Image (cartoon, rainbow, N blue to C red; front, side):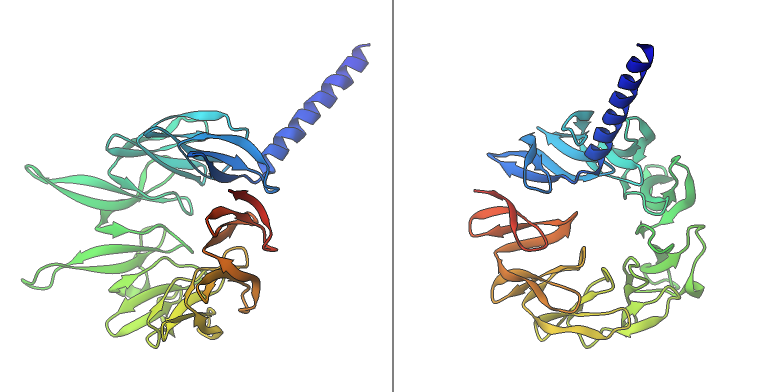
Length: 343
């Protein structure tokens, strides 16, 4: 009898673990119905009834929700696991979420414990183990100087706050702003790049501006140069022939020429000729593009795989994309099929 009870208990425990794992692996998507937000699964079934004033995508198995004027977090069963008591909040990233209490930012762990106490004026989410944060340094009497630095997950500064601005790390490189004064002229701001130890890279090369590195490239401007630099700091793609260009995503970067959009690869070669009146980045192998006033989707070769038919089209995320067709909004799959629509 004891053996039978033991096996029944063991089977129950295994079943519970399987269900928990399935809940964790299930992708959920925010929807809005009758002014409230809930969630559907990938098949378009409502699994968390609309009840929140705002809801966001899941990250690290938790999702931000807003109740009245405050933010909290729910799990994939729709249970509130971190009460909505925060003035502002962001998605979990690398196991921590930035939250604001009154005027100061700190970081929560998934249990709702304040892992890094609120003491920062501004923060960015953790990337590659570090987060850029802004603090106020006392300079003289009633004067304070706001500077950016980088902290680790223990809240310790590993790169001291001495920069006018700082962008999070990507590909092991961060862009930061220094203030530079020449003789008696007013101080000017220049962008430089540093590594995770805070060492200046590229022999101190200064840029008028430089974005985050993605796919080993970062868009930058320096003197009369404009284009993408590699992780050595050298310009490898000249974008001066284009009216606009944006950062890489999935080895493709948008450019605009003659008021039409196309895409280049990481070698600077045009892989999709300029032909679209609007375009967005590639995500999950597809990019939204606008053709004759409607949005559709192309693959990396420029082939239209979902015909232009939508008034609005967003990136794919976990296999579904938000779209609007006529007065109705909903989600489509990568075949272009509507899986859920809010009529």
